[in-house]
Length: 448
Image (cartoon, rainbow, N blue to C red; front, side, top):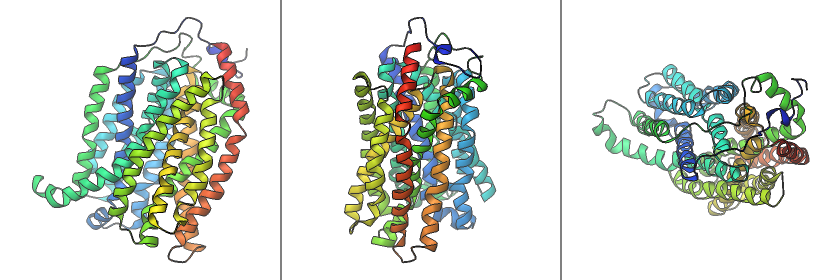
């Protein structure tokens, strides 16, 4: 068979697979999930520090926007594929540990930044380190469990997304308050409060990196996994061969990324529409994310597992699709409710559905991919939907607010327009790939 047209049989697993004991497999998942949580905390805590950083470094809103967006997101997105290549060909446990330590070092060093340029370099470094975690971790998890248990394990791992975002609101705000009132004395005035926050949120990751090296072993790859099969040429040929399944998956799941980045306008929306200051909003929304996000990711994994055991080869894809529908409708209209409490109720449902879709989408990308290609296919998947979210989400809402919906509360209509129209189109496109995905999984099963 031509190298340019690989089939699942090329990477079939003939001998009986041996997996680690369940206890140690779940220890690995727990540590990787904790690392994922910390990555989101380190990534998003900057959004709470905009005002004090601007006051200290005397930079513009545009400069802060660069720190929150392109200087992190672009390196995070485009380094995903090289990181996936490394994950497919090297020790994934060691790669994850080094990545954790590196981005935590960059977070801590952010606390000593005295200029915009220094902070920008640290932000770049955080994206560089975090880009390696997801492909390494998900590839490891897929080799820690039998196929029928992988979805639940990946669901647990994806708890880290919303746990980290929730903690960035709750812990970040609390640490900033403590640093402002008490931290100056503890650090003898050597650091500003926002710098203290960076140091404190970055330090715990070093402990997680060490524990990962001590308590987790690199799982065995399938016996058929070889360097030749793991080549980038073969990986891209596989994606082309199954593009009717993987392109709608990668593009359609941009609806989740879109909602996440569009929701970065929520503090502004609550201030303009209902007069809620950012600290008050952050406390409530952080708790919502901590409760409904992890529960959605966990339940999504369980549902996907049960659907698969019932004979539905497209189980994770199906869960992702049917989670996006209420996310687009209920999340898209959250800002249109007459009171903030009704809006929070809608956001709770949106957080649950978004987490379920996130978990199922990642599971679908990993579940339908042969072992030699998982890291890079997941990197391509992440790169695609992240670019959609970062470009259309925050910019789309801001543009419509500036040029179309000009009233003080126009941002609520701008957000609804982006999420309902763009999110709806992406969800519809995702639906077009479900049958092709089921066929791809059936082919993979036949080769096992």
